Image (cartoon, rainbow, N blue to C red; front, side, top):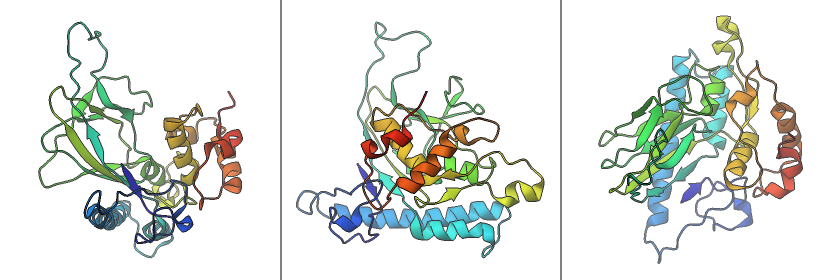
Length: 289
């Protein structure tokens, strides 16, 4: 179950009110009768996660040498006001597939979620204390993640797990890494988790900060990336037959990619105040290969 910032940015507006339309679509809260107090508790937790995310983003900026009020800090001010974050509530049922007759040698164990990097700026993850299934890769850049060096992230009771995303990696010119991670299944235990994905505004063009490259005489590693384009392609790649898997590697300076041209075309055509329709933008977004 996903809950995101309503297009109107007003939680008390009816879910399917036209003012709540946005790229990520409408929220669909259960009614008070179906699930008493669910909406109130969820919204309160969501807003607290947004406050914490803003605080963490500013601490990350401080670590990079960015001062409050500077030009480089303005993106954080915009993100605090225009973020397009969402809260996901996951349930992983037990999955007993350890029968010797079904196990294929050298294959990974059954996965709850395949290897991926979080697309947004940062993630606040509330993990299940009783089922330790989240794993992070210990190897360097690889969108495929075929290395077998995986480390389990054991949750600490009373704490949350913080993960940096793709947009923070571009923003920091690679100083902050977006780690590849996956979720295993457990043969006997259920697992619940609740990640909050702190994302920029759809129209935000994420590019490396001057303080992370020019001022330190480091090469610029990434081209600018439009968050709304990246977000649209990421979930279209997951949920439709578009046939495109977008990664930060497509925006590296040392690679050739048609995504730079396509995102410019997409930005001119898209209306971020309406629900995303893959068919409307298919001619722009689909792979030409």
